[in-house]
Image (tube, rainbow over all chains, first blue to last red; front, side, top):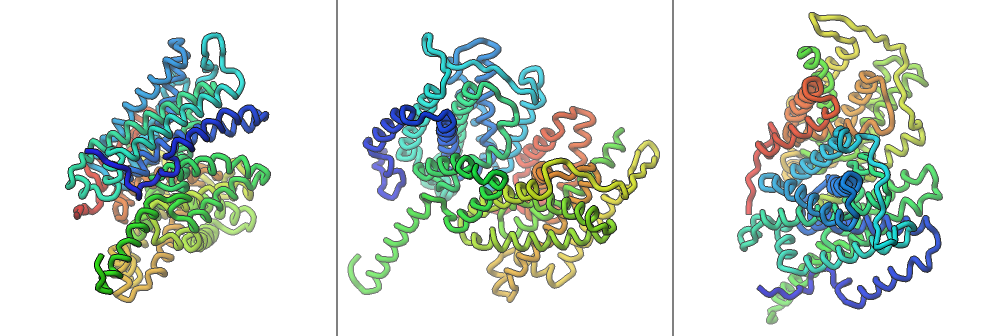
Amino acid sequence: MNFKPNRFLPNRFLNGKLSLIGALLLILILPQVVASEYVMHVLITVGLYIILSLSLNLVSGYTGQLSIGHAAFYGIGAYVAALLMLRLNLSYWAVLPLAGLVTAAFGFILGLPTLRLQGDYLAIVTLGFGEIVRLVFLNWDKVTRGPMGLPGIPSPQIGDLVFMSKVPYFYLVMGMMLITLVFMIRVSESEMGLSLMAVSHDEVAAEAVGVNTLKAKLLAFTLSAFFAGIAGSFYATYISFISPDSFTFMDSITILAMVVLGGLASIPGVVIGAIVLGVAPEVLRFMADYRMLLYGALMVVMMIFKPDGFWGAKKRVYNVIRKNLEQKQLLHKRGESV
Amino acid sequence: MFWQQLVNGLTAGSMYALIALGYTMVYGILKIINFAHGDIFMVGAFLGLIIIKQFHLGFVPAFLLSMVIVAIIGIIIEKIAYRPLRKSTKLAPLLSALGVSIFLVNFAQLVWGTEVRSFPPSLQIDTFQVGSVTLSNIQIYALLISFALMLALHFFVHKTKMGVAMRATSHSINHARLMGINVDNIISLTFGIGSALAAAAGILIGLYYDAVYPVMGYTAGLKAFTAAVLGGIGSIPGAMLGGLLLGVVENLGAAYISMGYRDAIAFGLLIIILLLKPTGLLGKNIQQKV
């Protein structure tokens, strides 16, 4: 089946090659302009958040399966990468795909309950999964060193060049982010993306028109976990220390907040959400102790005024369709031809 | 050992059940997960502590006063953060609730500090032996108060006019409105009762574990939410059953299997039960319609 991208679909915003080249140029130039280590660190974090929220968007945005345990995948990726590098002395480049694949396998496993569960019940299973994974990190002392975490994770190396400053890390994470971005755009405009969205709108109806809903959901969970695992492996090598505290329920919630605040099932929305929520705690730093207080209040205010997020895809689509329908009905009433 | 763990489990479970009731009642009516509920519980614990310590009131007046104040806070939170979002997508109130949660935790840290506080020693802890089981008076108070509150709630929901209105609203908001029920008031009432129960649980848990701190709502909230889903979210007897069951299972699991994996056992049990019975133990099976 050959499916042309529908004009109602989101993502036209970033569809052009132009904007991609623009983004690439910006990424290349940024480290030359920004001298501050601190700003570079914030930018790298934002890049990581974009990968994480784009990957969660595949499950919670497109496929409509609320997941509140995404940090577990991030953590699995980080731990797999760290353990392989520390115990087997593998290089980061060998570990990177492995971390993604192992995490993807866990994503597939978490996708299986979607066979029987929906909505909030599925959400609590993802929550339970996230907590169990964190508790295993915490209690499996022999392997993970428990609450002490894993220090001294080596940096990536290209030839003789070892990643020392923030700049190579910045390029690495931005490269990963761009690959994720392009992948997600391609998925959203493919037949697979359409079947995912069909599942999120109405599962029974999707099944009726021939979408293999189980396959779609499993695919979404697996791919989503893969990218989260990649992000996790980057985090491990970048920070060089991981502990169970880095992958808590609050982290899952932060990622979900980026997706919802930006706009579910909208790639530009999710990117904006990740940037805003990634930068907000830093910008609010001048508030000192009141920072997180304000952050929470802002979240409530933003939800009240923009309940579909900055770039809510669904509402836009519905509005366009509704407007078309209303016009047709109006014409029909007047007795004009449609 | 078994009986001791059973009693400890029932004590913890009865308090989980109190918090779970708030989740389940709100969910039954609005179909939203009130993620701020755990933090409302924390505020209740702090208020009880402050009233006893700084206003030198006795335990009983402090307990009741804290419940009333927290009920009002719950109603205000609903008015500000959830009411404007009632017609929007399901995830918007969820995020709004998270915002409230972050706000409350940080508010508590600013006002009351981050350190762990405990109730003043005026409340004597006595322990005594019943057979091989060691009981403390706090354990008995906690069990008695929880069960009394649950009985009162059961009576309220089933025997009073307001309770009937509440059940009708949870059945269908629109039909309830057509029957002349002031749905907005019922929703406020639901938040008020749920929050008051959470405050009660907050003080009891604060006493039982001798610790009150700003992030205490996180684990307790998560556990209570798990209990609510375990019993079938939206079902009031389900929340009570789920809470007790969760408390007992995690205490037995901690004693016989592994202390560190205590919470993992609780969540594992939850996942298994949900896979076998996807709507929880006492949840209604809803046929999916095309």
